[in-house]
Image (cartoon, rainbow, N blue to C red; front, side, top):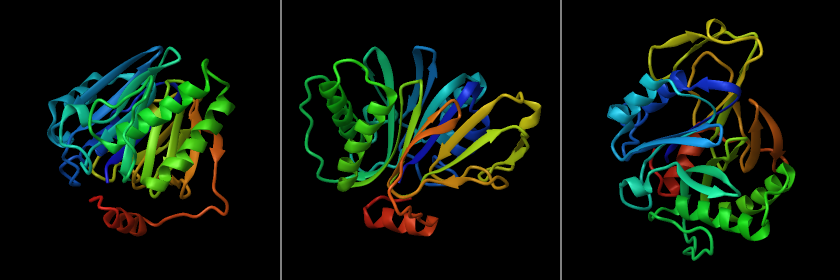
Length: 280
């Protein structure tokens, strides 16, 4: 199963600390060695960096750490290929334009039996189930709404199609238009919201720590979302199974939670992934 990382905040922030531990899972502390990508929103523009080589040893990943790009919305993905060959065309995140905005999508899981897309507006370039699901979702939105709807209408429509797509298999994903970030958990997805009073955080994957109180202001609020927690001394929250949430300005503003809420242990999540043919 691939690894997801997202960030949503109320002020432009760099993701260097979280990415430093995350990138090591791409071929060093874990076996996800089939490429990686990261997308940064900057106002109406987007920076997309991708490599079909292992993230832990990629010069492109080095650039991310050296550049220290600041953004309010970031989505990163480390790939463990299940459908589609290892190539740049199959590397997440995927980007499309809708209603004059860039939309970014990354998926963790395996969708089996998803029909081929023959969309009027959106079609896959590569051969992954992930890009196919992204195009299917956007095609539905564009056909249903000629103009951009309210945030609440949009969330409800995406939730409806998410319920449909998850029937095909594991569908952990992140989606952003630069204003908000959506996260959906089929199995494992964790998040933390950092805000004042800030403290120290230590990475799981590397012996590195940072005191956020020294690099933030009292008004900062940053949500970080990941497949598995990135730090060992902070309290991460878990999304419930099949829960969809929208982050904006560093906090959850909308939820589509299945009742009663159920949570999956990491061991259970890994076992389900293996049963679905997804290696971690």
